[in-house]
Length: 123
Image 1 (cartoon, rainbow, N blue to C red):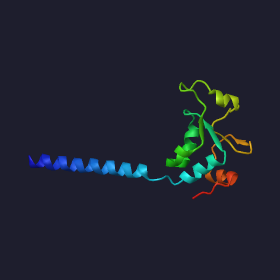
Image 2 (image 1 turned 120 degrees about the horizontal axis):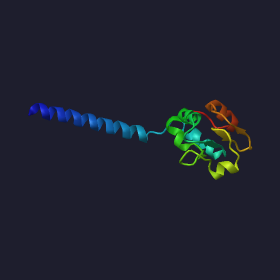
Image 3 (image 1 turned 60 degrees about the vertical axis):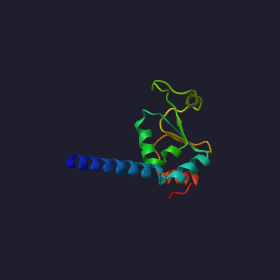
Image 4 (image 1 turned 90 degrees about the horizontal axis):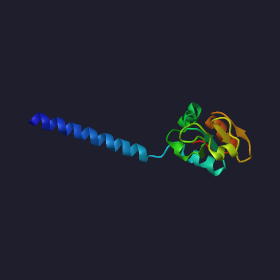
């Protein structure tokens, strides 16, 4: 009986520790939050598709901060067609970055390149 109580106590502590860690980690700001928000403020748009591996690579570069990216999803939910907005903008390659000066770069971009193109400061 005592052994079961100890085992359940340890299991309970492990669960509490995991929940605490996940909550703490998720509530902590991402390293690139301000940079991603600056891109949006500068009028940058990142066009992509959920099924695009290069778009996923681009998002991974931003880590937790990807939620602040000025991202436009170009694929319909079934992954077979392009949304009207992306058709209208004539987006043909994913990812495509569009800048406030109207220029476009259809590829995965480095943080340094995005910083140079926009004057957004890297941390």
